[in-house]
Amino acid sequence: MYNSDAEGIDALVSKYKLLNQEIGKVIVGQEDVVKQVLISIFSRGHCLLVGVPGLAKTLLVNTISEVLGLSFNRIQFTPDLMPSDIIGAEILDDTRNFKFMKGPIFANIILADEINRTPPKTQAALLEAMQERAVTAAGHKYKLEPPFFVLATQNPIEQEGTYPLPEAQLDRFMFNIWVDYPTYEEELAIVKATTNDSDVPLNHILTGEEIVYFQNLIRRMPVADNVIEYAVKLNGKTRPNGELAPDVIKKFVSWGAGPRASQYLIIGAKCHAAINGKYSPDIEDVQAVAEPILRHRLVRNYMAEAEGYTIERIIQELL
Figure 1 (cartoon, rainbow, N blue to C red):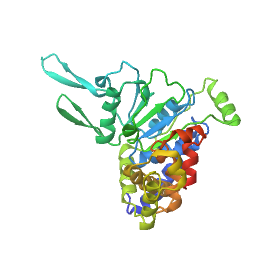
Figure 2 (cartoon, rainbow, N blue to C red; figure 1 turned 60 degrees about the vertical axis):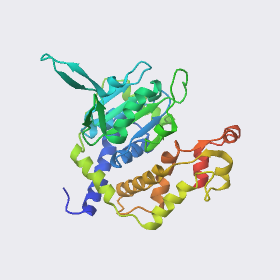
Figure 3 (cartoon, rainbow, N blue to C red; figure 1 turned 90 degrees about the vertical axis):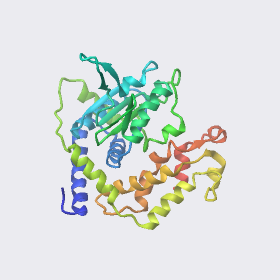
Figure 4 (tube, rainbow, N blue to C red; figure 1 turned 30 degrees about the vertical axis):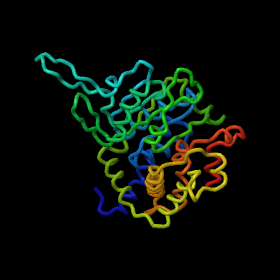
């Protein structure tokens, strides 16, 4: 597609700027959220968006799928949702043969809306697709077309009638992205833009083939040994029983992050470097992606909760 990897990274920088411009036509503010979602797409990861209702989480995913020119399906998770409602089911056709009817999981971008509203059995059906990028139904394995990306949303307030994701399932998400309220100026712009009858046309910036190319390009990026060592040490510091653990971790954390976090720190750092026009990541790139990667992998103990020590504050002290 491009003559060299360096040319490919230069192309990614310009495409990333165009993507931001197009998304900015619909989404006001939320620059960090958009940046983290795009990093996880190019890193071949999945995202968990956490925020109160009405902060345009669904609109953001819809807009991104449109500018990327990818197929998009939204699954609203409810307590009565079954695994077959996501992956599909075998039905008897006119010729009295069983035929597999594909479910909404067979798309490039999946919005799993309020993933904690559905029982573990249904959550697990989605997680096989996330990890294996394939679906098993009636003894047959069906591959999902690349690029495949799950963006799940979760409401942090209402916990009644919900099934919180277990740690092992949270670990499947590359990023846990906190979506915050807009500023006063941003909210003014949102209200002005959304209370009239205008429809904003969006351009397709990237094709599925280009995204797969950029995903492979990021995997090929060279990384210096000292950067890998920094990422692994940073992750090792999160484990309260580990030899690297500082006092803040020993005091406030009951469980640290597993090896998957180290892998994501490097892949995320590579992508962060690439979109900023660098041909190899450095320690600053690891630090830039550390918070959304570690946020859902550290488990605070009762003392941290009693003293009001947030996960974010603990991560900042580690950095």
